[in-house]
Amino acid sequence: MPIRLGVNVDHVATVRNARGGLHPDPVRAAQLAIKAGADGITAHLREDRRHITDDDIRRLREEIPAPLNFEMAATDEMLKIALATKPHAVCLVPEKRTERTTEGGLEVARAKSQLAPKVAFLSQAGIRVSLFIEPDQRQIQAAADVHAAVVELHTGAWCEAVMQGRTHPAEYEFERLRAGARQAHQLGLEVHAGHGLDFDTAEAISVFPEIKELNIGHYMIGEAIFDGLETVVKKMRAAMERGRLRAKGEAA
Image 1 (tube, rainbow, N blue to C red):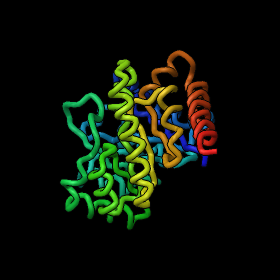
Image 2: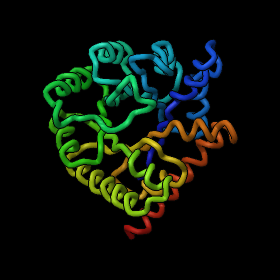
Image 3: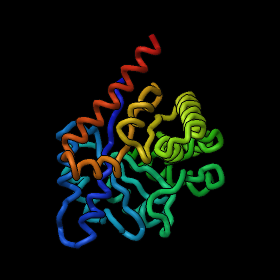
């Protein structure tokens, strides 16, 4: 099956907010990404509004001709915004004010009683619920237990090991992702993945047939400074498709 690409536009908003005003516009970036072949748009509305704003979420929902994946912490404030906005999907993520970016997966196993009603509220409103988690057996089982539709496996540890040239940790993390994708699929969860991916790692992980979608942001926005966003989206899609073709060859 083809693998979908979700483009995260958070850091277009980061550049805008560094100076204030309206430029560059993350909604315009989202429209360009869709035109170039992205399947959806991801945006994280943080508690401190450090990049994406409430108005960005409203405009993305209204103005992009593709699904919006609304990343958010599992708080009452964000739940209200999601229910009012009605994005295609919500991805619940851990969030700390002191972090530069998301530092790990959501702790689902220890918070099932708090997360289950939030997943239910969102699902009943017609919003697909994804949980951003580590490729860990307990967390994957817990995601199924709270009736999430999707898990997004955190690829950060693997990507960091690859980037630093640490072969054995990279191999270990890659196999954890492989096992996690299989387990989640067997439990009836749709499997996505993301965090820290570049052209090479996106191609490598696309060989997992269970993974239906990759969500990629920071690397693509950075590369867009040099090559333009439309070119980068097309290059990323090509990398993912090469990985899928390799998986097809291995399966044959």
